[in-house]
Image 1: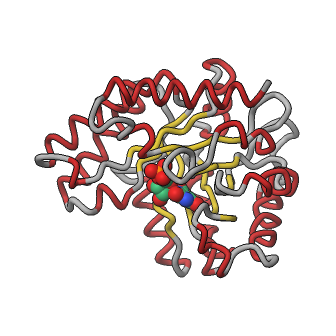
Image 2: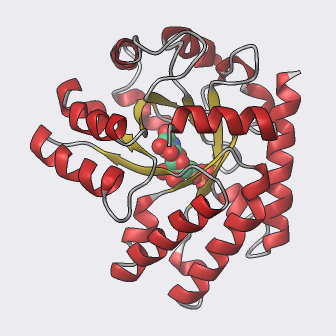
Length: 267
Ligand SMILES: O=C(O)c1cc(=O)[nH]c(=O)n1[C@@H]1O[C@H](COP(=O)(O)O)[C@@H](O)[C@H]1O
């Protein structure tokens, strides 16, 4: 699949800019089977309102081998529902190790269509991820300005801008009006900075985490989108999966409300 194209088509055809995070917390369930079933139920309930889904690997890895089996099942169920899978792993390492991560998460049995990556080790170390993504029609999403308050210890100060410049260059062969294989993570919690990053990376899909539980609101995110309402995915995990305890109908309603809120912001 061409991740950027599939997500953009879903945005236009289904009128949704929502990425649903699937981050099942072990403590909320009786046992792994309960976690598995609830996560699959939330996925199915939220699917009509989602442009893509984003399982955070940490929550599956925390369960050991059964967690990886659940992850495979979640990815496979998402694909059956027509949903592209963006794995949130924030991986990054020296080049040869990065190649192994890329093999595992972009081409292996648990692979997603896209993966979040960390640029801290240098831009060359992102190459194996990008090569694997391009070979499989996928994408990488590079951390530019994360949603957490303490990101400012290292981010901003020209560093995020430098990462944005690399992303823009990496997408430079993408034709105008389309989005390239290198996306950017910019926290939805920084509404005042969205216009800047939108402009710095015209052909990058922006992933905007922080909707809901971290305090970001749909109506503040307009500046991350291009005029046609494309170019960004706003992401919520807890606010959908645990909208009201384990009530799956509440998850469905929360996904619908977030989708509608984002669409309202486009007007
Ligand atoms: O890459 C991410 O998805 C991500 C980047 C970032 O800057 N902030 C951030 O919260 N995330 C992830 O997005 C999800 C946010 O979860 P909620 O706060 O429950 O919506 C978690 O899986 C985080 O790991």
